[in-house]
Image (cartoon, rainbow, N blue to C red; front, side):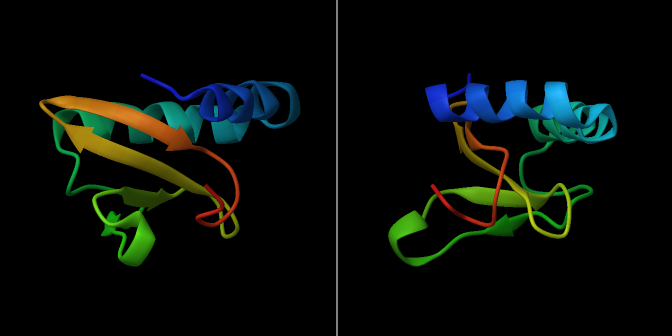
Length: 83
């Protein structure tokens, strides 16, 4: 499930960089299988973002998501923890 902002981010990547879209799709599939391990250096976020996890998409952009009840809730696909 995507937040509205995450969906806008996904559409942005579809329009600007198909290679990034392929990487995002791969990361999402890995998150579904195991939200805590895999590529993209999964990292538990802290502070006000406690409970959220991130994975590296590019040097500047992160997939930020919330694993809960066997589902992945995507918060953002762009920027570095700018949620």
